[in-house]
Amino acid sequence: MTRTLVFGGARSGKSAYAEQLAAASGKEVAYIATAAAGDAEMTVRIAHHRAQRPQHWQTVEEPIALGATLAEWRAPHRLVLVDCLTLWLSNLMFSDGAQYPDVGMIELPARFHEQRAALLAELALERGDVVLVSNEVGMGIVPWGAVSRSYADEAGRLNQAVAAACDRVALVAAGLPLMLKGA
Image (tube, rainbow, N blue to C red; front, side):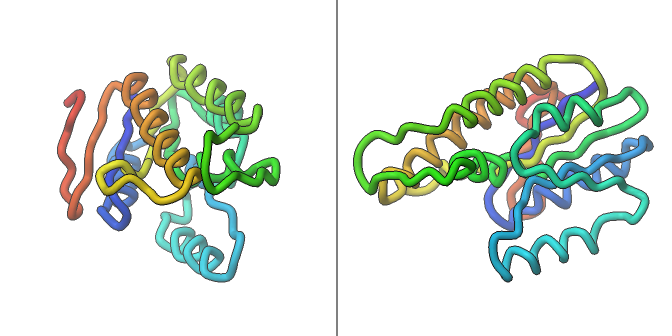
């Protein structure tokens, strides 16, 4: 059982690398997609990603209950690919229709904390291989506005917690993976 985090910047090649790992595993693949089509542009992006995946991969769309869905699909004969944690994080932050102030401290919804804890608890268990994709959003300037800063903070905390739970961690830049943890 191997848990792998693949992270990098936007359009860095992280999803393609994660999909290569899944294909090379020789196992049945379940693909958990966390994106939600909130507008026409995102609908096109989702359709593009669907078209690129092998037809024999099972696709599960789950924008919120990632820990429970991961628990349902993990098995010794299967690799589960989750793409992506930062979209999931965004879904959680706004799941209850939360309105955030432009300045000041952000109070995240209870569902956020519950779902994050459920994901990390599931990753601690040995049920089957999993590859998780996430964006690295903390390498730039400090974002403008309280909600953007809170998102960057939470994405960084999530990446750190998931990396600690994983056996392997790869940073992808310009399509090239750099192994930070594991072989």
